[in-house]
Amino acid sequence: MEQFIIELKDLSKRNFLLELLNQFDFIELKTGKEAEAELKQGDEYDLFESAGLFADREIDANQLRKEAWRVPN
Image (cartoon, rainbow, N blue to C red; front, top):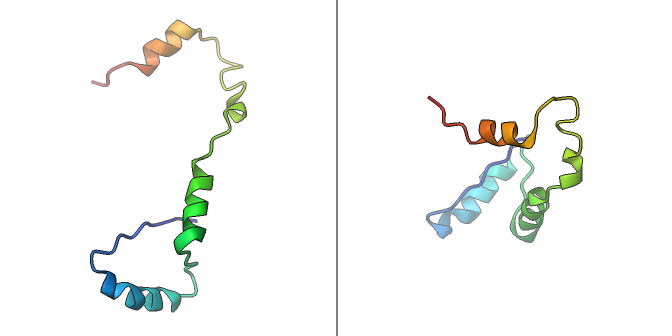
């Protein structure tokens, strides 16, 4: 699912936009606290899911740093 963030320049158009978006059956509209809660939930990262990321690679910390900080041409 793809998400968009819309910032309204004119709050008087809010109701019009909400009514318009509600007409589309392929859009699930979340507003207010529900949307904020979902955004916060998406920010969480479980470090332990990355365990073993380099398990099958023969690379040490110095090589990894060198590649990570390599400046592209």
